[in-house]
Image 1 (cartoon, helix red, strand yellow):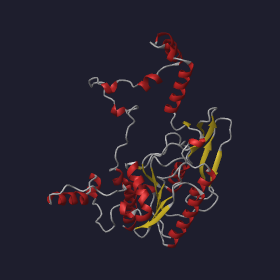
Image 2 (cartoon, helix red, strand yellow):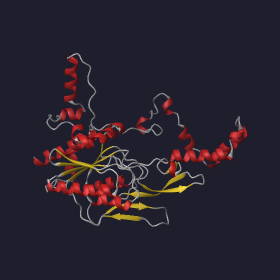
Image 3 (cartoon, rainbow, N blue to C red):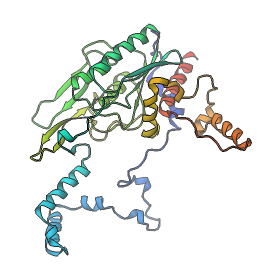
Image 4 (spheres, rainbow, N blue to C red):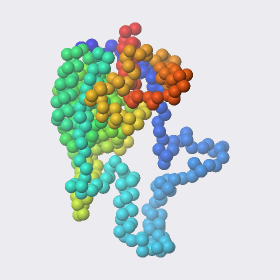
Length: 376
């Protein structure tokens, strides 16, 4: 099988640096603005410089916190509402809000909606680029992955796009690790389940040779959950795979469901997943190397119909001319602009553009750029 192994990672980075310049800026959390977003000491005061409620609460020490409760009980206009039950409810609500990935309150098991498994899908794009959407990390999808990888080898596929944007949380972590073993070197640690102090960590390692050894791109977003986040981190560490898309869910943890007296469930993160380089993936998630924005609604719509149409219709058609370097750096699309101008000249309003997957398109652009670079 032809492999992309003749260039160094430095050359790899240089080859895609132009693409990275077109990435959209990272969206800032409104409650925690970055330093660059704050006004300078010379600028006039504005409302944006006022501390948020979260900032003020975080600044309270134990003495202030106790004083708030005491003052509420003695001075609030309706002191009967400041009961121990209400205070406890506020505490639980606050923990769920402040630790959204680590603490969850769920209805009773018989009332909890069952999460439908996400199905496996694969195809070959452009005759030599394998596309795999693994879906849920279960036994059926693992078997389908093995079949697709064997097919890729037989057809001389030399680049793979591994789409982890529809991977639900897996309960069987050993089975989930099997997906990573298909791509990572034998004998290497895939991820570690780090437990609280005093409890032994659990290490998941590759015990087989990888089934695919070519160039790998990994697609992620907020639907990349749990062990799928660890798989993406392992491929980036061992395969130098580029992670493209959006930050993962930040739920790379082992959860326990604890039954409450009412029958409701308290779901707690009891151990966190750690990548091979020693970094915890909980609760911040894995940030992409090439950020590309795409709405969840558009992506899920595409995934829903791709089983019949394939993924090729949702990227630019191969027969169309490629974007030139100037347009790529400017973030424009001459094809779309020309089509809209032609429609306006004919006196018609521009039609709504068809569904489009910019994350997959970016991965295909990178693979194509590397192919051109290697042939020079």
